Image (cartoon, rainbow, N blue to C red):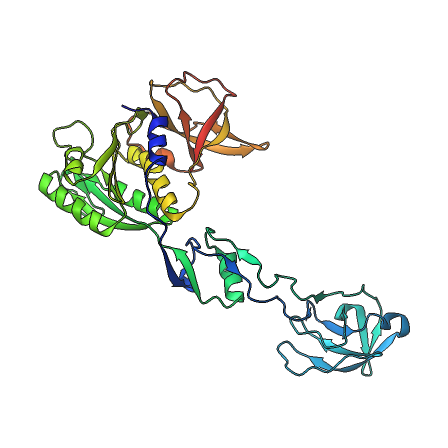
Length: 399
């Protein structure tokens, strides 16, 4: 088996197809990755604008007048506005264009009104409550750079500049195939104790969707070589990455490891010195990839994070969200093997740094998916690491 570090180097050297893009309506752009810079086509605001309800006036009038005549109202959206001159003001509302001649807005709270005049009770600085031209952005300014994941603020900004269609990176399609005659889909009636639920399909679908990929459920395939071959061919036709679970170990019915090369795919590696998931296999056919994961729930989830997530991120042109960070052990840790281990742990942030402990985490087989519930991470121990003392700095993958 190759080392974890070698497998990651090999993954980084894989040739990925050029980014593809598509245009979608703004309302469908949430969570997508921008394939272009979003640039302002004009200054905003295009004219001085009121930021409060008050009275538009000349600031110089503060020294010359204690009272100003009210010429009229200037509601938001008005297209005909009177001009402010010395000794007069115009009642102006939030979002209204400032009348010509005015340079300052005195808030309603700073004046009293008597017989068609305002009595100035508390002056304000020059330009108060006036949004200047280009306060939000200037023409030609890049507001949202290419490669940004569209969230609520990006949606609002693009709506504000009348961006109806958005050019986004085409999401890679990821087909998920669960293999094993013992696998039972959710909703089906269990006929005997040997059947287990297909949690992997739904866990991996959620991971694909979280990463911004487009998941395609290919269903469950029993341990039959021809059926598995046919399902993989179908998955390759309709997707960029095929992710399978089960069938890669050393059992008599582990057919996937034999079928993948027969599909014309080049096996990049098969077997990595990691715990869990040592039998993981990565293969490539043209610009498409097959990543075959172990069947146990915890193993398949961890190996997906290690080997599928980086592929999806590269196809989206984004950073891998599962890059390791540094944390400190709150408690000692006993290493269980001479492999690179990925151990579920609790992750907390205190006193300016991350901390790791294992309270409530169960030890046992690689099937305990409940260990990933809560504020969880995967702590990484290298092949050459031994037992670790409290206070040791460790690398963790934040989940």
